[in-house]
Image (tube, rainbow, N blue to C red; front, side):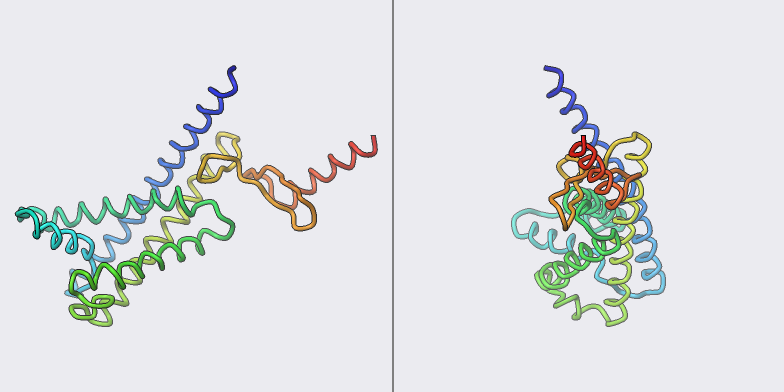
Amino acid sequence: MRQPFADSRSGNSRIFARLGCAFAASVIAIAANTALLSAADYFHLVTARGGLLSLLLQVARRYVTVSSIYQTYGFQQAFHIAVGIGMGIAYAFSLACPRGSAWRRGATYGALVWLANACVILPMSHQGLAGYRVISFGGMLYFACAHTVFFLLCAVLFERFYRGHSTRNNAPSSDVRGRPCVLFSMADDCRCPCTPETSREEACSGAARRTTRVIES
């Protein structure tokens, strides 16, 4: 009777660990991104910053009177940081465990979000495709670079933090649903537990040796 409760506690601890690592990674990443965009503001380089907030305010004005506080610099910064943290947490629970490097996953996630912003959000806010009506080519390029820095940092730092947590607690890495990651062999249907200390070859070769000893005995 204790096993279901133990599994529940273990699953909850993995979820909280993933949340904590995602929060820490996204805070660092959004700080770097905000610094880069603030540097652009300092040099009077207009970027696509604030496109989502502008769209939301345009939609809200159709139905209610929007307070001027939502257009202040402080609120825009807070909204930008909150969205960045939300995207970091969404990454941790959607794309953080598939095969491939964290760099590739971060670049893929960033490209998808950039396309959504350039092709949907900015045109809907009357700024044109990628904001070409109000942004220079240099501003577009700079924004794309700052945007990519955020997603790469978020992916790489999350993987580093989560691996460190798993290693300290001597626990196997887990997928987005909290289940242990499984390594698959191309030659055999080998499913070997993936731990931070064990590579694919070591795990599968160890399982093969154990199977051989059982057959010989």
